[in-house]
Image (cartoon, rainbow, N blue to C red; front, side, top):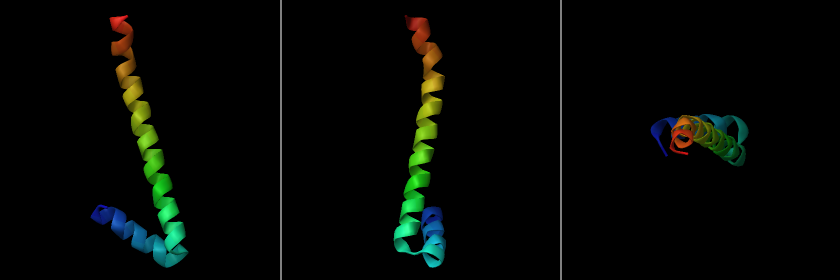
Length: 52
């Protein structure tokens, strides 16, 4: 866990509780990964089409 993640977790934990803070950060991480994978797919798609 990075320093920024830890700081965000501590802020959320103090306001919402431990479980809620963990759930929110997991949600944000999952959404970020989905967006990155979506961008990768869009970036790689034209190269794949050219090979076919």
